[in-house]
Length: 142
Image (cartoon, rainbow, N blue to C red):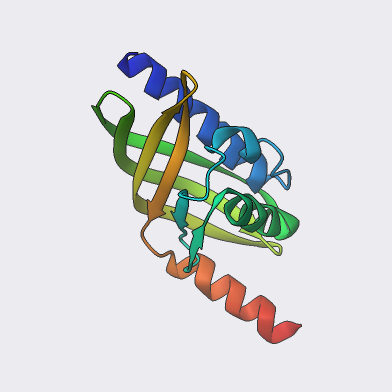
């Protein structure tokens, strides 16, 4: 168990996040710990609890996503025995319903070691006014 193991788990999550931004949320299922204790507080608001709900939420966003690139910068990791906390800044863009949103938000990710493999157990970002504005326009147009 090392910082490199957490960095690898983080890379898997951000790879999955970028695939979701391109419309494919399948990789998200492998990034998360499969427990009811998982949670996510998204840049579009809301709080999802449990593996199934979280993966379904990312799949719903993937349905309207059309590209972009999300990166983690200023990564800080606090590593424990079976839990690790990662903080940083998510930056980039995402296209939702044909509209591009800028991403610049603080993030906290908590990883849990499950059967020797580090998996995401919690993801929390600031709200994104750009994404919320796009979602509002899309719902008004529907």
